[in-house]
Image (cartoon, rainbow, N blue to C red; front, side, top):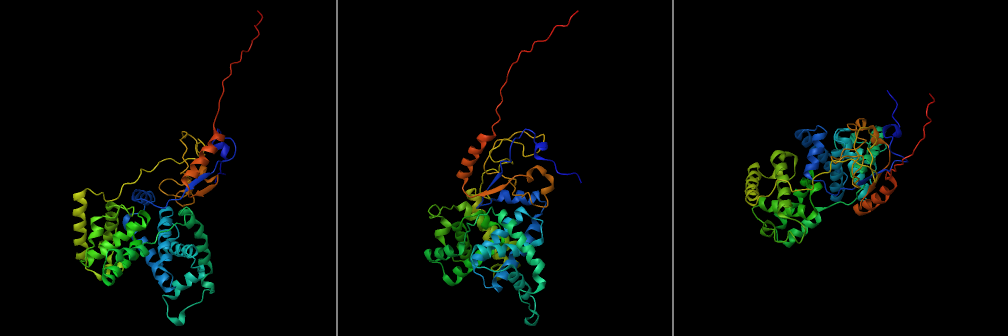
Length: 390
């Protein structure tokens, strides 16, 4: 195997140290990015659904066994989804789900050791006489794997600890619109748990998710909440009918195709969900609502922080600098992913820095760019040549 090329050999025009990369945290991931990430990794829709549902089911069962709060469950599911968008083919769903739950326990201040999580998952499947303790050597190697994946889990989320919990505001909406506490309220709460089996929590705001859960619960029990369906207060809560409709259709996709893997789906007939979906499809067609809400077009550039360079590869054209780019491309593929690391040797050099403030990243890019400007001057020099003697 040939030794790796030096940075100067790959890019002789660049002088000085690598300017580093900036990774901007993404609190929302839109559908076009999710679809493109899975397509780039070669993951089919059926395989993605299977792995996603199995991972969330594992998190939910272990979370209940350990009596962890619902906030930990919400955070763990979001981290699991984001991790799979970056590393869709690494370590199987159990390792990813365990690492997501381990990371969420730290973030939500419900601390659990990695061995405790693995031990709980093991003890769930055996009789009380066969149960083990967290200090058993059986969990030693697996525990190290979970701890190692924690760093990748944080990088996949951009070190963004801003999480959304729709359950609290969902209950407030049920009271605000005088919904039935026993039927609609309880069903809406269970729908909010099922919703984390989809990608909706990555795409929507807290109020949008809460609106969708209460509305779907009302439709299931034929106790429609007219105030939500008409959308009189969407603007006040910074939401829209298009976003609520997208969330409703995501939930109905889940209940239609994977009803047995959900909480609410097992309590209602398939025909009920199909009838609701037909009604919503008619409303969406009448009002020209898109299936997925519009999002800004993704940028196709992979650029350095403040430097007009070629990212360490030869034969590339210089590109305009943007502070939101990093070694990851816009499909959220990471340089440490097994599927992408070997194809871009020039991207492994330099430092990746994570930021939450876009304006700060932009200001830093402009400051750094001043030191990487290429200035050229032309000189004309007259050189006298001696005449040859005849």
